[in-house]
Image (cartoon, rainbow, N blue to C red; front, side, top):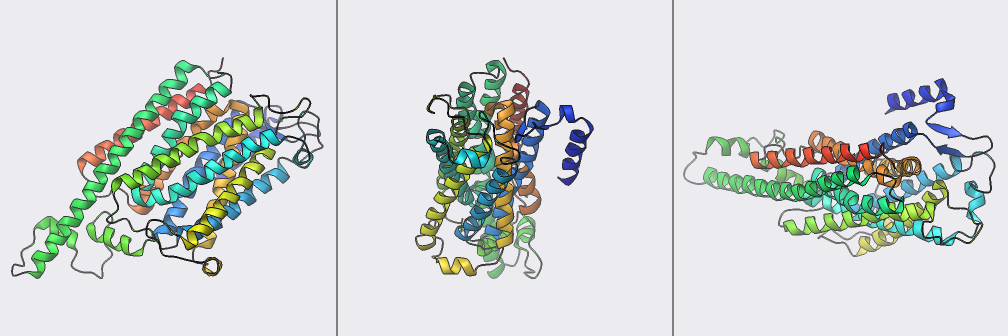
Length: 425
């Protein structure tokens, strides 16, 4: 990521007249060029695809998701504050584009309400996904939620952006995302069946090993791994059992439909936050009074993040005392004393906060429908899921085939959506 930032910086310094981020005299930073929008979206892609892996890692190590999400929410808000007081405050104010401090005192509450509504649905979506990651898996959860986001969100943004992207390019991509959703559900079901089969064979092998006959099939003996001192191989039944024992959210015995229902709910929430932010910054419905300037992206993002933080704080404090999905009860005092993994949760909040900010900055230049191409983030999350967590190791050929088809369809959809950003009416 540092190398990528150096390349961008060198291009800005080499060609200031065609820089990716433009600084007008006595005005704030604004992303104006197509290159700047793409750079913002790529950086957002890396950040938004990585922070879910960090939270998943903490859950697998046994940290309560309520504790993790409260820590994450603090730095997520802090990222918005940093963006507002840097990009949004540099330079003096202008009537049509006031800086952050100036705009806080203006009568722009209709737009503020849209921004805060976007923050609420995003917070609900993020809160839901941390449970879906455990039940459905990081890769499939991200593909399904991102695809639903594009299917609904990009369609709404297409009309809000006054159809600036060509429908004949944009909507075939949306259709590919819809197919990816269906394939993602099939991958989850197939993988769940594979895990059941592994655990069933493991129990059978244990019974045969403890019974009168000591003969165990070749495949069963490999999976049994009678030498319990060795680290279990990823994807084996013993690996799944040890993971179940260490993780915070227990998944054995949970019905498949629960995880998918949470995933689809999260996707629906994600699909609404970008259109709400679009309305907040562009006022397509003319809710602002005459002469009141539209919210600049940095001010809108600040209000967006404030509401995101408030709803996360309220819900997670409630979940401390009234947990869901069989999690143990906790308390605010226990949360304050839990420093195990806290810095990782802080990092995740920064990654998500700056990722969302960069997405919105790119959306101002390229259109919010095209900026939804950052929903390619599951490609990054899938990489972390396979490399860090061993997802889909030793799965059936059916699961591998469905996984390949899902990712292929998702990549095709992202390619089409990216192409739409270069074809505007």
